[in-house]
Amino acid sequence: MTETKFSVLCSLFTWMQRSKSSAKKSSKFRKFLDTFCHSGHYFSAIRLLLPSLDRERGTYGLKESVLATCLIDALGMSRDSHDALRLVNWRKGGAQTGANAGNFSLVAAEVLQRRQGMASGGLTIKDVNDLLDRLASAENRAEKTSVLSTLINKTNAQEMKWIIMIILKDLKLGISEKSIFHEFHPDAEDLFNVTCDLKLVCEKLRDRSQRHKRQDIEVGKAVRPQLAMRVANAAGAWKKLHGKEVVVECKFDGDRIQIHKNGTEIHFFSRNFLDHSEYGHGMSDIIIQNVLADRCILDGEMLVWDTSLNRFAEFGSNQEIAKAAKDGLDSDRQLCYIAFDILYVGDTSVIHQSLKERHELLRKVLKPLKGRLEILVPNGDLGLNSHCPSGEPCWSHIAHNVDDVERFFKETVENRDEGIVLKDLGSKWEPSDRSGKWLKLKPDYIRAGSDLDVLIIGGYYGSGRRGGEVAQFLVGLAERPAPNTYPRRFLSFCRVGTGLSDEELDAVATKLKPFFRKYEYPRKPPPSFYQVTNNSKERPDVWVDSPEKSIILSITSDIRTIRSEVFAAPYSLRFPRIDRVRYDKPWHECLDVQSFVELVHSSNGT
Ligand code: ATP
Image (tube, protein in one colour):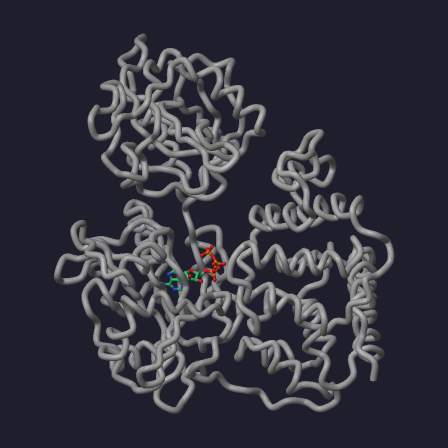
């Protein structure tokens, strides 16, 4: 049998992308499978169709920005050529990137079209997989660039565009993974959900007419997690769980991690079934000692516990703390795993048991260790007390009525937690299910349309192209001034750099340049009109030495506020973005801290 050409697969992709009907997309896919994939060759094609589910090769380490640089080098372009800038600035609109702004593969396809021929390079699907294997195992940028250059030499622009989309793991074909699985084999999705192993699915289910016995979960193979359905308010949640026995739990803001223990072999699988072995340094020994079953799967959240503050650290420090543990660095912060479910004990899967029974198993199997390994099981009736006898907050309660839910929700909001999760205690745990056995109630959206007008108080130098130039800003909120006076002090609030075009950013930096003063840390303190913390993440390279000369930026944050330890204001923004520069607004109309805190509180629960 001759090997199927990659160009055939590209034609399928192009056809699917253009077609509007999902039934037609599915039947075309079927035709492709029947005509071109003879037994045993399904995986090599399907892994290219569902690249985000393929775990057989490692990660490429090529997000758009690095990929842009590698492609520029692979194509032998000068870094400041027009096309190179198009690739680097793929996200930005305007003359440089044109209509394709925001879609890296389309911008790349345009650039490639001018450099590659029309004729197919003749690669087979196997050739492409081999080259992608080489790309994933290449150890540095130069090696990656060399593999990309081979790919470019052996493909045309269309083929290379699809390869780029495969590398970025998003083909935008307008067909769900569910439909693809279903068309391949009626049991494919179920089998994938309990194994997260695409190769195994493709190999085991070659014969579409042969049904596969439902498989249970196994220690060592990631399972797709049970998910929560979003509800708008406590009343809605209560109605949905009508008549059920309900537990309400704090929704922790960390990494969803499944811990698989098989004797001394421990895996930490993320939601996307990647094995986060970096968590092993801080956690494996604890799991080996404190999980009393030899074989076990725990479901829970990985967070960072701050031993000096006696509370969880803000979201986002897991990787840093895992690395510190690896390097043996001393820190007040440590990884802490909160097990909220158990899926497997000894030789048996327990997902078919009720949550109540699984909680009992968790209690038996897991020996908690304060600030390192905790169990989330109900700790008392809400009606009686929302704190444990020790006075510490309880994170899990049985709720008897909607008022209990409301009260717990309010408490978590006040505590600035992410929200709550309600669970039916009689329910089993089902892979990839979001049908409403678990409900989530979250408070945390800044009201749409409320841009925040903040003042630039400092700047950070960029790297690479923007080396030596201010590329990000430290922005501040005003301390509320007395009526009819201007603010005198500003609290550092967040660091922001994205959202503006290069030209806009340059214009702001140039306007402020005469007022930038280098921050000679630690020789000189920050200017007295700024209130800042001593956190190194906050420390700007330059200060704006007079707020009256500074500029207001409108920033938005589409996600949420976080309690801030890095900045002087009590809350900061997660993923802030500059919306526009407010040259029209005088410096003293900067938002004040009190108004911002009110805004945060009034957004809660809506
Ligand atoms: P979100 O962005 O809201 O976390 P999501 O799509 O990642 O949503 P969902 O299934 O919708 O995931 O919400 C449940 C998520 O909440 C879990 O994946 C888990 O990471 C997190 N979580 C935190 N605390 C709990 C808890 N007590 N029980 C279940 N999930 C929890």
